[in-house]
Length: 587
Image (tube, rainbow, N blue to C red):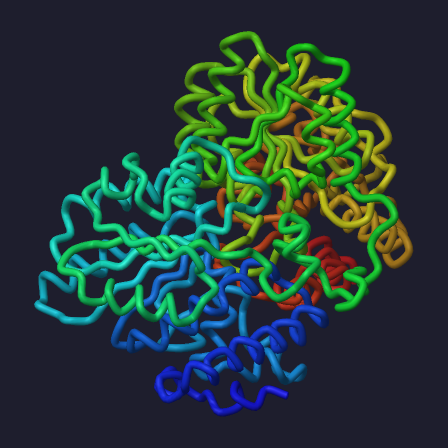
């Protein structure tokens, strides 16, 4: 096994192979993909479909002198194997040496740490312009999937490449007719025209930008790719190489169901069954049922997503059942936010849903198009918990500080099943402005019991003295644990509060706590800077109340162990109890 792959220690070794050996290398790479993905999961179909293209790239070009920029970079596993990192795919003891994305800390062959989409062409234009300024000769190659073309930055990059770059720049468009889910938008009609005409359609959006154009009908044929890339290498101005590929190629289950296999947990290769246990009930399932029921019962409800129906487990059948009440704008968060503002002004009740890490790209649209204009829009954002996504490019820990400081935007942090449903009802039916709901993660809990009525009063779940614990959202469970341990260890009952919202203060409750409390601690599932705890600390700044904020540092964490990180930050229960003992002088 891996007879050819074992010979590859750098891209130079790829160039020495015959065509037959290159094809054997492709088989070895797919076996290595199976080896890693079945054991730890990751992006599946995107990598299986890009094997031949990345082999051909390293055969024709000379990395790291020539620069590769992978869009999203979730399809860069074959590239990693060809650049000295095959052990991360064939040796189980070394799987976690490699991230799921390109990473300059791993290799000189990775130029950027990238995990969000539509960025590659813009990054490449910068590299090309810098090369022109200093008189360099290296080739610049941007590798972008067709799904990424719907993002505005990709179009901005094409606009710049077609008019302002005057030397060789190669844009490989990996057209597999599939984004995360199905593609949406007029761009894809033109790609279809180009495929069906063999690249000769009169209507060609790439040549309209001023770019050269080359079509490869079989983007999984190594010889055709080598020929095309060699021609593009010699172009005297920016060129698009449009390759028609099969997402999931070489894995029958992924070829058949590309959406389900875009990303996967560990699985059985033969059956496709997931091999790790899953929670019986999740907040995602609760949100999915809410969305489907709302679509059936509310004539004005519209669910809008920037190509992330999977973030709330909305299957193709689910989406079809919603009809016109489901809108997928493609990978275009700015469009989703602005379109929602228009929907709201037009009398609809839009719910925009995706992962929080992606919605941060629409900060300006949320601030300008939605909030300044008083548009009644609800944003439901998943993966906001610090223990959900841990790759540096996909962190949800910044959501609280990013969104809670936009004027006229209510940020809600449910801590239970009933709160999630109550907040969705309030945001869609009673709030006359914009709301962000940061989804909790982990085990579904029943407390706090009641929903959310919009009174903006903190919920005191347990009345006590001396110590007040304000535990926000997903950290409410930790607050419960600490409250119980305080009573057992120190012999008094602390006050336990579930604030429920992070964008404003319940001054009445906070003032009341001054009467018989000496210390307030805040627990929040995000960075402290600009977050909820600092607002509490500022409120108590001129009083005798001591405040201790617990949250994450303003730092780009990467692939961390959540529980280990809590211990490192002194946020585990034992460390918090020691702080309480010290601050209250409980000797």
